[in-house]
Image (cartoon, rainbow, N blue to C red):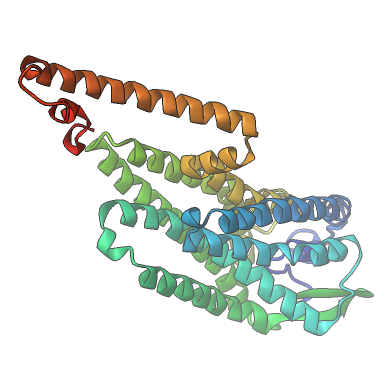
Length: 363
């Protein structure tokens, strides 16, 4: 990365160390964005890290408890979110002061950060698409296909991270150690990586989510099955959540790309974009703990299992009594119906024949 130019949008902590040339005013000083991020980001990253660990680890524990609820794609989504979460303490320290972890850690943390970001969004999109496949075509819903899909998504995320891993470096700038992309004179790579983030991190997952939602909506309209209606609620909730979290960030990245192309060159606008990237990135980063929460709350079957596990023995006893009472009422109704069928021939039948209402076909 040219240290006199703005850094990659993918690293919120990098935007605030640089002086960007301005056509009208010379060097564009961005100390305001730097000061704001230094106060706000460490607290936000720390809080996000704690919430992410709590929600994602809780979901993993739930998968361990309830094997019937265990699904490949949600489990991989949680793994991706935890991978992303592991990098947040490093960014918190970095935003507060400087990069103190050395050059190897700069590349390793960037690897985890980018792979976790790309794979999490891709797993969300494919998880919702899999809901439609499970509903419409069970033949395509084999465990082998799901494993192959998960492996492909991890590989795709790793390949998308390769440019970031190649260009990122730890070096000194204005007396501070920073971890940023170092493009030298390869200006086109900076623009490419911005659009890669927009396309692979937002557009493709969003298109998959919208496409899956439309297909499931068409299926639900043709049937009245409650299970399919619940599936529609799940996919709609995830689609709306994904759009709310990632659209503002992707829009600001696009505006930064226009700035790199010199479509936007005013210093004031550039400063506003730097402040905007802080806010929108923080909104996008909330996905690491909102994804597992949304998965549980929008998944009725999952929610019932957890509520049943957490209920008290007295509540379980009352639930069992109500269930037994309902079954008993139904059995009595069948018994009376059968008794009516056989009452006409009661004088002719034996005692064994009078028990006909207990035969399997009448139960």
